[in-house]
Length: 327
Image 1 (cartoon, rainbow, N blue to C red):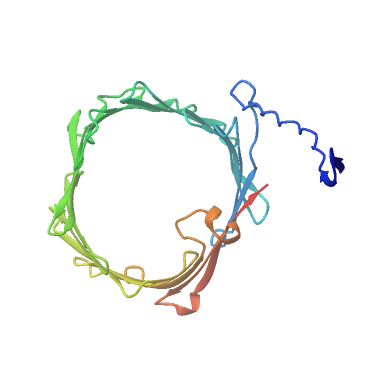
Image 2 (cartoon, rainbow, N blue to C red; image 1 turned 180 degrees about the vertical axis):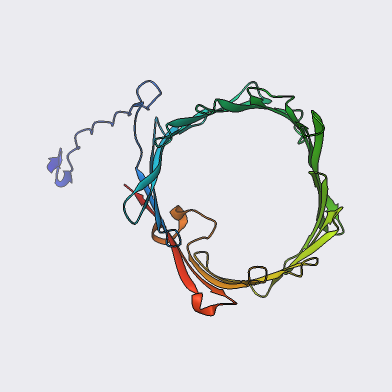
């Protein structure tokens, strides 16, 4: 510090030197971004005690996460490798090559304008494929889909979708009648505080009605012309408990399942199936229908005990485990 001019008792702090201003960093663009930049490598291992088979998959993304490369294979407890496959997957093109069969499956999808999408698939070894074109007629849920086999063996399959269902027309060949045109479709709608579905396929009409509220679901199903009737009943006993029951009126077969969840990562299920005369109990660690990424420690485990009614001594315990590693 230095004394001020004319006043030796007043000190003036020295002015600090100016600090250099940080220079702005260049923003990466498609011209200077590395084309083959790789993200973290993902390794997934699965084991099924029932088949005593390991499944392994290695994958990573590159080209700024626009494409993915995968390598997968199975091996048994003897170390024998089977079904090795290499895959290249991107938004518009995917290639799956079977190293054992020396065959490749090529798939491609691209948009032609704002309302037309084209999808194609081709099996190199079988020299067969399929081409599908989907056009959105309007923004209200109407669409027209045309799909044909390559090489073509007849008229393309046509499917018209609308907000409450869809109708499909397809050419079929039978022993007595050739070039028979078959019709299939599905219709959905609201009825009496529930959702009904009418599905017609292979000359069979299946009528399904689903009533559901916060605590109960009731689902009767009727098939025509066989008049086969079945129904499902689901009851929520509490925030974490649920009971499901299914009964077939023609065969008198029935099944029941009790489910209890502990948070989002633990689930216990137990049930009985009269058709196969089997009781079972299952415990899941990790979301049963989710991925290993969201499970604790990125690992999913299932334990299942099966107890045959006719031979309790032949009961057995099996387990499945799936683990993901990010490197």
